[in-house]
Image (cartoon, rainbow, N blue to C red):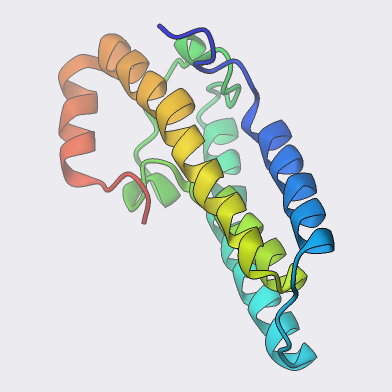
Length: 153
C-alpha cells in the first residue's frame, strides 16, 4: 500500500482543489461568456453533484456502515442499493460534479484541470485501495457487484 493511499479525506481534497482552481482562474484568462450561461451550468452541475452525493451518504448512514474514506477497512456492509445500484462511487462522482460547477462559475479554461486531476488522484489513491479493501472484506459479493455496476456514471 502506498503512503498516500486513503490518507487525505476526499472532502479536504475537494476544498484544496477548489482553492487551487480559484488561484488559477485569478491569474489566467477568463472566458467571456454570458452570466446566464455561466450560472446556469454552475447550477446544473451543482444540482447533479448533490443528487449524486447526498443520497449516497444517507444510504451509508441507513445501512449503519462507515462513510470514513480514510478507514475503508471499517466498512461493515456492502451497500449496493439506492445510488450504489448505478454507480460504485456516487460520492466521488458528486464531488467531481461540484468541482465542475466551480469550474463553470470561475469561467477559466485552465480551471477544468482541477476536476480532471482530482478524479485521477481519487481513482489512484482512494478508489483502487477501497476496491481492494472491499474485495478482501466481501469477496465474491463485491466482485459480482463490481461486475454489474459502473465505477463512475
